[in-house]
Amino acid sequence: MNRFLKISRIVIAALILLGITALLLDATGVLRHWLWWMPKVQLLPAILAGNLLWVVAVLLGTLAFGRCYCAAICPMGVFQDLFIWAHKTVFPKRKFRYHKPLNWLRYVVLAAFVVLMVLGLNGIAVLVAPYSAYARMVTFIHGTGVVHWIAIVTLVVIGVMSFCWGRLWCNTICPVGSLLSLVSRFRVVGIRIDADKCVGCHKCEQGCRAMCIDIDGGHYVDHSRCVDCMNCLNECKVGAIRFGLRNTRNIHTDSSRRKFLATTAAVGAAMAVEAQEQKLDGGLAALAGKTVPERQTPIKPFGARSLKNFQSRCTACQLCVSQCPEKVLRPSTKMENFMQPEMNFADGYCRMACTRCGHVCPTGAILPITKEEKTAISIGHAVVLKDNCIGCGTCARHCPSEAILMVNGKPAVNEARCLGCGACEYYCPARPVTAIFVEGREIHAEI
Image (tube, rainbow, N blue to C red; front, side, top):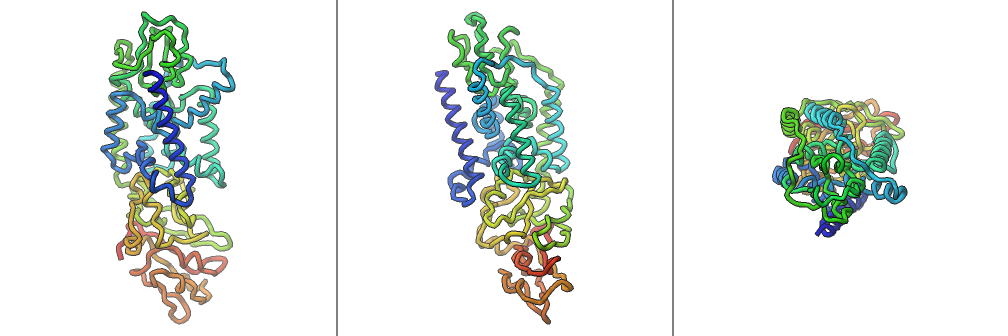
């Protein structure tokens, strides 16, 4: 039975890790038809998407069986296991030992995460969100720019922490792990050590990647940190450890702190999905060879509905960025919406036949729409700088909605028909400053 539990965990974890990684690297979008559900079962995206059924299921599952989510469903948790395996391979004689929990760090990071989410600074908060951090590593580790270096730093930090101290990142930095640890403290089923059978060999303690088993401290198991890796079950050769109804006599509690943190986390998660204050992005990056005037409102994808909805729900996981075939979506470098995708028409424009981003977004920041629905949504409107225009008519010829007409050799925009797709801006040959650019809408309009 012990071996079955461990093998089951490994198989599920491997499938989740490989599936999400393949989805993030799949530029063709073929895999989304089979793997679309994997990002949606990640806890923070589920909270922001309002998927209360799955959120409740995870919390109840944690209350019953502990942090199985961290062991098998979270890709960042599984990714750390690769470094832990490397540690055992390189240093087979070095073993893990029980380490006192760094509760002060755990709760400070969780509180900071909640505050940032409430303030609408999602892009900064999700620097430590597990799914978002892993997605950025996979998507941008081979790229350039600010997000590329953030991905490298994240990989190095998590790699070193995992290689040296096992699941320390899960139990000190990860806000999802900290939230689930508050619930797991009261789990019904868990690791139980029979002191009468234990021979004090410490093998279970040495194999515990969460460093939460203390044999000398009264055969104590810190169930708030246990990530259900099941290693201890197989390490024990005398049958002193089993996975079943736990012994609660050694639970260490701090009632007032626990209640405060649990309440704060719950309220913060709920408030994170509420509408945030309007934020102006200040424009996109300059195009190669030509510049675009500063946009007063950033352009968000079709299906985002509004600037508020997008900014309050987006976890900056970059899945939509990796799936965009025209490379129109790029992470922002503005502090108020750091790393959240915005539209840039340097290398292409948003074609009416593509609705891929809405179908892969796990949080509801971009809702799935049909191609027909897309042609009836306006995310922005074109603005003409007549002094820069050379009168070539390129913008009018490429406008898919025929919203641009040439009048006396200059383009005139019918804003009621303009979709904000960016074709005019992309094709405009004017230099050094484009003669036409797209201004975003705070609330997307139906036309």
